[in-house]
Image (cartoon, rainbow, N blue to C red):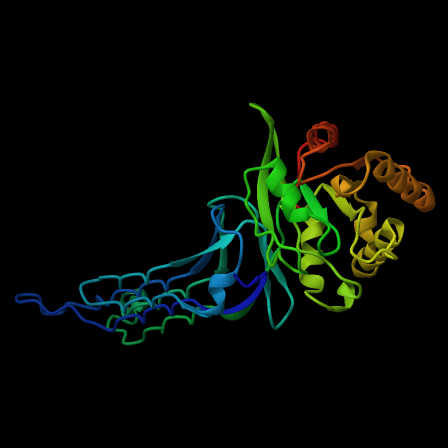
Length: 342
């Protein structure tokens, strides 16, 4: 599936129905007077959060969303029928803004949360509203108001407690499949992960957290290289960053410390605030090295980086050290307190 975390759609709310110019005409009533009803309200457009969705891929095929117009008023003081609202289901973490003005309209962060993005027009007034002691047979009415119409920019920022980050082939997909029930696609070529995979890591019956497998970054991602800033945006709402580092890269000259620094530079260039988030190192693929060699290589990288935060040596394939790591993450998240959307 192609990853889509940004989409532009056009929404148009319904026009209000026109007011009616009608006069009461009944046998034995010589001067019936005005009885034109008001027009119905135009339908509005709502976005609704859906926890079962995790991409904006569906909006590639359907970009126009139009609500119904209100019906005009009728005689006998009958108000026109209101136009039907339409609802558009979006994944949690969708940020909505006006494409033309840049105005942020809101965030959809909760299941079944409703966000009105285009308000339907009000119905027009029938001539009954203009009756007075000096104007007993008014013919004036007002037309229904136009509904709001705008282009919307949707941006999906994954809502997760922990964001996995690292360069391609660091083992992120393998790690998330090892510690949760998620089953992302795994292969030994760049960009196996083309859209974020969410997994629930259960420590015990009442303790769990959500982890997001953020697609791999490459050097220059902050300027849009590779899959670019699309994926860096997903890191902004995670509470803790887990940086997976390949202990046994295919390029023998690619030292773990250098790969950490390169990724830090991409984060810093995209959003310096990312560097303030809690971030741990997990040196992966220790199964490809002798235990003492893996430990020493990780320790050398930590010393070279001057790293003073938690770090671990693990093997996602062999599930060595992964249980200890997720238990420590759970404890840290509990210390940080409840999550809040940015």
